[in-house]
Length: 152
Image (tube, rainbow, N blue to C red):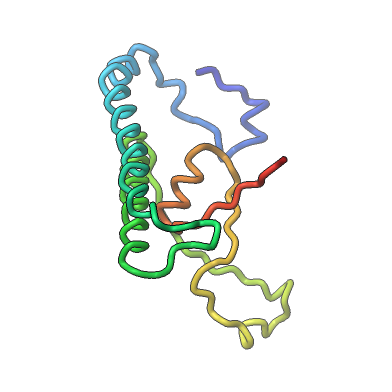
């Protein structure tokens, strides 16, 4: 609750101006009432992903490639998006998606948009790994295929 001016001046985006109004006793009722139900709902939504998607994908060999387009793939994506949205909501995380257009003329030249092909979907998404929320947010909005780095 103490503000450290030396630290806060280096990180203005993360500075809390309301910490002087915090009182520890005000947090206890919410923690005791809401946290157990939120943990239970989060566990149910994550478990449901495995329970619902395992039978739908049991005949598919993922070593040969992703699922082909069709109603089964659409249903699996819908399950993932719905249950990750529920998991984010139960943990108190609100998300939003915005599109920003940037001017790359400094790097690509003044007429770079003349030969520009519109992209339907990005080929590579790299999150900044700020927290555990990154994977859930990416599933909610982009439904990507993850490729973790294997080390042998």
